[in-house]
Every structure is written in structure tokens, then in C-alpha cells.
Image (cartoon, rainbow, N blue to C red; front, side, top):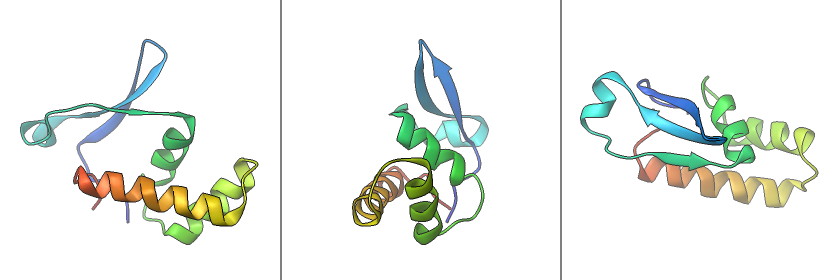
Length: 87
């Protein structure tokens, strides 16, 4: 899975936001704010990746156990799916 084309990160007043550009802006009418962990995962999802790869990256970057990281990643992915941001 990976982020669909037409979405990018923007820094606005020290906040990381996901915004739609180009064709995607015609159907996506919103902004998603990301915390640092969400930004980290978003960057990883710019290329095709798996939950297992995301979990490995997160546990090596942050002080978090594998079970918690995996559940947090699944929650994040479900949020992105709900907003139709994943290809």
C-alpha cells in the first residue's frame, strides 16, 4: 500500500498538514493534521510498503513495543483508508 498521488504534506504554523493537489483536490475537501509519528508513517507510505515494514521502521525509530506499534499503524492506515488516501 502507499499514499495516492495528489496528496502532499505542508508545514503550516508548525503543524504538519496533508493537503490535496491537482485532480485530487476536486474530490477531497479537507485537511488532515498529523502528529510527528503520523508524519513519519506518511513519509514511509510515499513508496509501496507493508504493515510489517512500517512496524519495523517505527520500532527502530521510536521507543515503542512491536504490539503497540502494530496496532497504532493499523489504526492510522484505517484512518487513511477511510479518507480514501491509499492506493
